[in-house]
Length: 111
Length: 116
Image 1 (spheres, rainbow over the protein chains, first blue to last red):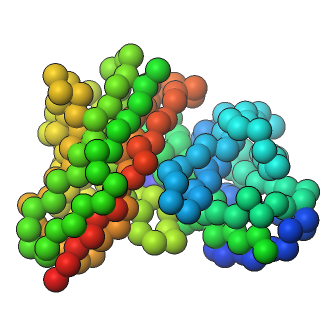
Image 2 (image 1 turned 30 degrees about the horizontal axis):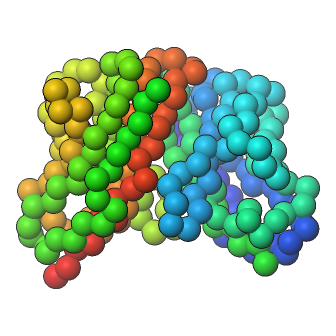
């Protein structure tokens, strides 16, 4: 079965600082990988998805970027954080003919 | 295009009473449907899935859901609520589970509150 490792669990960063959130996947190969954001009182917003190494699709224009340097590694980044980047970030994975599985999330607070 | 409507933002039940979380969907294709549960500051955990097999789907923790095409519904039920069921629940529709380009649409979530 798939296991998703996501870290850190919580993060407090000042406005203007860079961001790097990492997600790695075990138990599957060539998965589709996703980054979602969950802001307070709102549903899940799909930020990025990837169907393969270096293949990234962005769903919404924003201050964030994503990269997939290896098959089972997905990184969410920002050069300069904004207050509006605060939220709960979830990495998710889907193998062939299987539903979406989520990591435990990172709570990001931008101060 | 597809959409998901979770009809209640909050549902309150007493421990030991039945749970009903409502979900209606629209989809141009034969959809796959899912229910996820999220406890505070945790990721989403898959409860159950419907992928065009049996219309009554049994999931983990005693939950089940029935796919009703005529009503475009996929309501989540449990006969007897437990305190540990208190969490947020998300209904999700996918247009094609086998496609790398399938679109997943999440409902806005229903918060289940369980009182002793």
